[in-house]
Length: 446
Image (cartoon, rainbow, N blue to C red):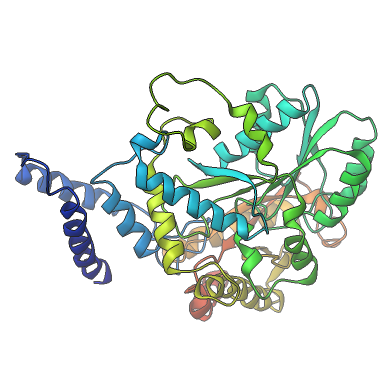
């Protein structure tokens, strides 16, 4: 019902948009509206074959619907369909992008920086590692074993040597191992993960910053998932310290299409030193002629990019200011509180084994069992049984090497144990924790 009401706002906004072009001669266009309606009904019916990502009972992967204003602004912009490569392809949307990215940079205390939107976190991280390769040719990239797999793949694409660093029992990068790896002088870039996609763990940034002073490597923060939690008011002290020092890294990736309430196709790369823009310099004889102002294509590896993403992001940030204590920040804190609340229920129930307390809004846990293989089998059973009750969880293969001290009574007969995992990233999850727990309790007793 709300979506139907919001379409009335879109209709008014479209009329306002059309008024800006009323001096143009009339353009006659005709479309097969009956055919369009028929196909759209087929699309709508086929799209029912999806998990209910919009509902609090979807508590599995990091999926959430964009904010209504993001949807409306995105749709409105499609009547123009701007391209944010060159200014003549997207005059207004390019300005929206510059303003929106500047607001994101302010989160980390950056006033003078270089940055732009990307098609997603993978492309944003690729640009960051590409710059690192330009600055430190021939040197390797290192990231934790729980870092996103994209860093290894990106390094392969860029021809950079890559090495994984083991994690400690909190699934954070083990800085003692990192120090040993740094001693050979072959590391050019360290990737600190600020919210792993598996467990939501946050690497020990302060210790890594100290090593940076000693060894002089470039430090990139992959905050694609966790970056916005800099605004949350209920982080544990270690995590709070990390976010308070996040502005000291060399580059940051953050994904507005995760906690930033945006449609997919909206990542962001930020560099603390604007001088790295020289590595993007290139010639384009037919795209940069309309203005002496900065064209976003001049500081991006991607060429054509959806201006609609910038319009949607700007509109969302205009409605929901990114400040501590505001509505946007409150949503982040609610998701984290939901994760803590559900974790407490799990930790106090003798039918379950905990992995680690949530650092952001992701929980990983498992049913009790005598061996890793038995636990894995039970996790799969609960996962499928919950889905039958419309509660959609996720599973996660967790390294048993990190569980030897915690699970001393379990036969760790496999390299990985399949656990249950939930991303409680919707603010509504806080109000639905009790109902989620009721379903989990029911299916665990089957």
